[in-house]
Image 1 (cartoon, rainbow, N blue to C red):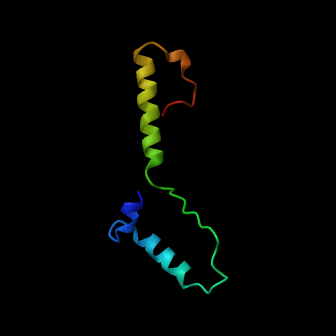
Image 2 (tube, rainbow, N blue to C red; image 1 turned 45 degrees about the vertical axis):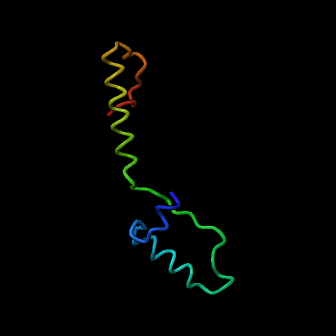
Image 3 (cartoon, helix red, strand yellow; image 1 turned 30 degrees about the horizontal axis):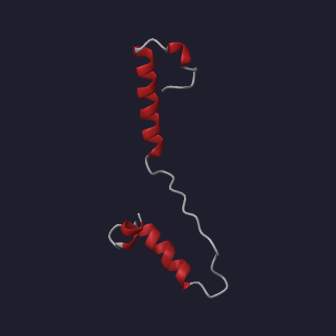
Length: 73
């Protein structure tokens, strides 16, 4: 992963702007740590599809009773 971030073409533009702004801050005002939340990275879609596939698999093998009301889409 570190190798991917070192290549300038793989760094998303918003991250490049964020890091540039942090580097331009005066000494003593920069945050000690920063965390970038990877929300909206497609994980919600992947999880929803995985839940649906899991629920379909349970139904096919007759384990419907293991599914709760909110376990599938």
